[in-house]
Image (cartoon, rainbow, N blue to C red):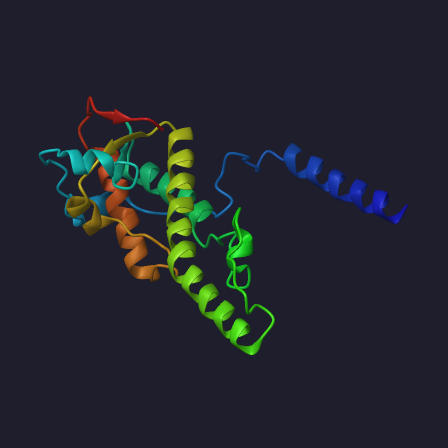
Length: 204
């Protein structure tokens, strides 16, 4: 009975909030982004032109930029920081303790229940954490950013790794330092709001 009572109170509070004229359900859950359009003039536009190679095309799932017609710098920055908020701090479903049991197969180890086995298992887990977890976290971030920005109507344009690196970052082993993160997001917003249209739009 107590559970239903609490549920009703929460539901009533939600209805009350939703009925308020000041509530905007489309607002980012990370808060309002306050940035002046003039701040874009202080940024140097990243280079985007390059001769595409087969190697570049094979890596377009990793290296790309977003753009959208008729989008201001402040709006693009608000969109990118919101999507970054969803994608940042992701935790892999594979943990240090999972070892090979987290995968569809198991690692045959004859000394699993000995001291040597414990040590070997620990070493294997460290190797998994160092190799697989960072890679998956980078992949999870890319997927979340692509889905979020695609939902907002942004095109995705392929870019070479050399041109992508100066204004982007990846998070595998730890979070990006906040100052460099915000600088990169501002440059991404500048690109998203001012880059010329391209005929080579990638799938969202």
